[in-house]
Length: 216
Image (cartoon, rainbow, N blue to C red; front, side):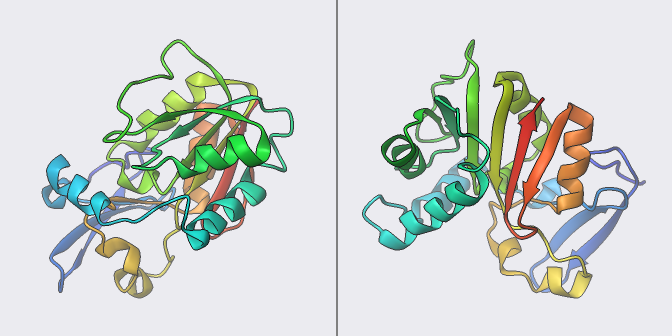
């Protein structure tokens, strides 16, 4: 039985990573790849993985990593932004601190584990950032719909996630799939299709890990 793509509904192809016992599904239309639900980790295991990350405002390398993202994907497109949301802010909301301190944008934060209040309910934003989050989402289109709903007109959505290699051999050797909490993998084509489905403009990508959308 062919499984329909979670993003565009097209036919998919199943393939396996024999060494690690992983099962994947790849869309023939938008190139979206996801891990089969049978190998997803539960929330307790997912949290344990996050707890191994050491993301701190005092880590100069991590701060530079986020500032590079902001300066490529946010600053050129959100000159008039005043209020933003960092979706998936992590244990220490470094990006929101940087956006407020260095770019003058007041930020709300939400995180599945660390900032669980849905502060975005009944609000709208000039900017939404989501860094290293969408690869963890089982139903990504649901969340992109949420982002669209809470963006103001002309609002910016800036996403960071590594795009997957296009050839099968490179994909199966890719370090990103070895993180058990990483279950969804994208290409610029995937994001083009998402933008078309939801009425967003896909205005920027570095074709590596940064992407920016605008609600027109």
